[in-house]
Amino acid sequence: MPEFRQNFVTKEWVIIASERAKRPDQMSTGLEPRPQPPAFREDCPFCPGHEDRTPPPVMVSEQGGQWAVRVVPNKFAALRSDERPCREQNGPFLRAGGFGIAEVVIESPHHDVTLETLPLGRVELVLRAFRSRHLAIASDPRINLVSIFRNYGPLAGTSLEHPHSQIIATPIVPPHVRDPWRHAQLHFDTTGRCAYCEMVEGELAARVRVLVETPHFVSFVPYAAKTPFETRIYPKRHHASFSWASDAEVADLAKVLRDTLQRMRLGLRNPDYNFIIRSAGSGDEDVRHLHWYLVIIPKITTPAGFEIGSGIYINTVAPEGAAEYLRGVQTDA
Ligand SMILES: [Zn+2]
Ligand SMILES: [Zn+2]
Image 1 (tube, rainbow, N blue to C red):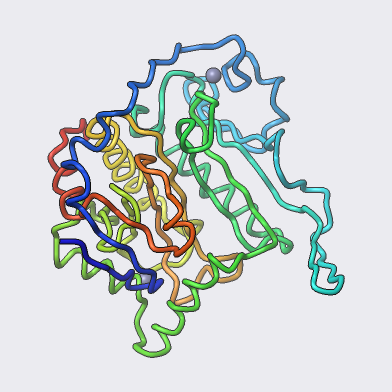
Image 2: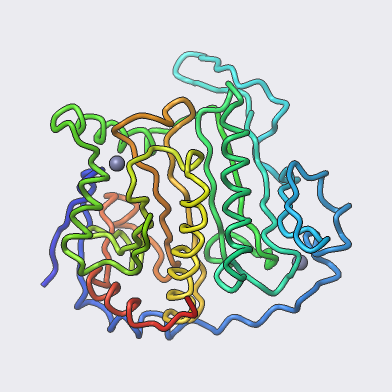
């Protein structure tokens, strides 16, 4: 039977209508298998030997005498670091200079790998680069929000095969980011508790939607998942910003992220996906009502008119069924 479910923190509603579609394992069978990329491409700006095709790096991690992770300014950024961020109002029309910081994290010199197929130590290096750039960028007083995300495959917004993630930092905190924070703040003021901590405790107690649990993290398909197989990774310790994660937490996150992504790759036929690290805004790193997390959204369905119009997503795979299916996938973790 279909049902409405509400997100505990954001108060958004979804419709879980699982009988409308196929079994979880049939969700991705219509997708074309992804061709295996070559280990090196002459026309790829991120392959080794082509370092002069990107702007000079802002950070390089080396291993075995070769670069392992390179972070470079995004040559095709929508925002520019030399614009002025100040706002101007003209009647009802508000504008601000297109200031922002945009960087690309090149995750490996090898063209044919991806985050979930890299060795664990290399995934940790990538996450350390995320943390270090997040800290550095957030210290710029003009920046109020740092977004770290990964687009994998054309349906997720990239045609570039070489393994990479992106960082975009803006002076603007938009309403769709700020509004859930207001709900979380109100919850804290009412109950004295972090709403996200309560939700994580609820998922750990219920157990039915949990995929992977490690000493510091848990990944689960949330109760009110908007799209099939949407998965979230939360730190068990309360803290608001990814940039303040400890070394032990970063090492543990590499494990849980790689394991979770492998379950999607093997169980859902290597789908396109986005992941996003949602972290408190600059200056709010130690607040008690926000809690950072990572959300992975496999691109198996496309939002249609009803979703765009109402903001109510129809999820055709029950989160409990999605979790049970992904728990059954064998990974090398
Ligand atoms: Zn390449
Ligand atoms: Zn919390």
